[in-house]
Length: 392
Image 1: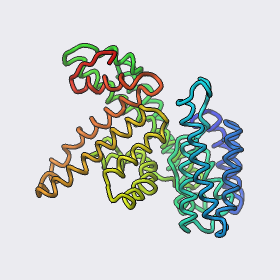
Image 2: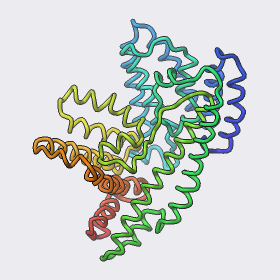
Image 3: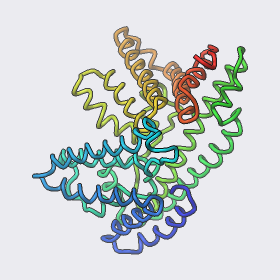
Image 4: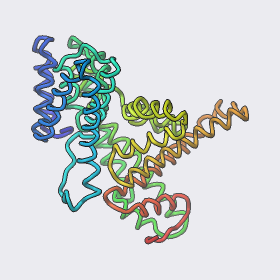
């Protein structure tokens, strides 16, 4: 959907209609428009997801069936995610090369898991079916997030049209368009050797400073391009939602100035990292009392959330290693009483190191579906001034 011409046309028609109808009809209108938008792009996804939402809305409301329904809900969502996202790459002969993962699968799975967990905990009471459907299907954020939580969605909506929301929404959309289609797709791509990782790997073969610098150039610009592109999409989604008076969760907060890996994950894909902290990391802490194991499991899940491939698993392992190493370093500093390292200019020394670390992680995802894990290892090794052969 976003940013196809049909998306902008739908937005231009639905926003005035949304504010023109009485307040009690607005969520119903937005729910209907959003379901129609998803159905136009992927009819079976819309039909199946709507059936999920309606069925479990009623089953989870009844205290007598709530826990049993939640177990079925939880298992069903995970089986659906596995069937569509993880089995096809594992069994390519069964699914064929033209198999397509259902639209928005990862995002709506995590949203619905949040919904089921919070309903069972008794923290989501008093919402209507039309509000739930509008939240699940909200067309500006359906395909690329952020992963909005239902309680935030309901609490932050504005009951009346405000000029400030319209100006802020349009401004945010403009920022997103510039980030994605000017900075990411034109400027940064123009500065790269090549956007293709295999071509980049071939071009940096050989010893010397030049290939080493080119390896860092490719990974650094690839990471910045990903940041500009993804945050640009989120800006457009958040801005479009703001036109409906919906103040969606922010997803980025200047991750390029993060001072350490933990700080980075409080600034990058915030809605995903917050979801994983609430529903994976903290429960794992309670279960194991081991923050390092909890961090490892959390990042492996985050990798699998993106795609069922070894590349993304290694991406998760890479980020987990960075976070665990930082946690250990913090513990070591506290024991030694090295508080001065966190004061003055020294506290910013971690910014270039963090940028380098997260840029190197892109070596794994850049080759997802395009190259081998060994290609990723070779690119990382090149950044460390190590030349590895094309074949291990």
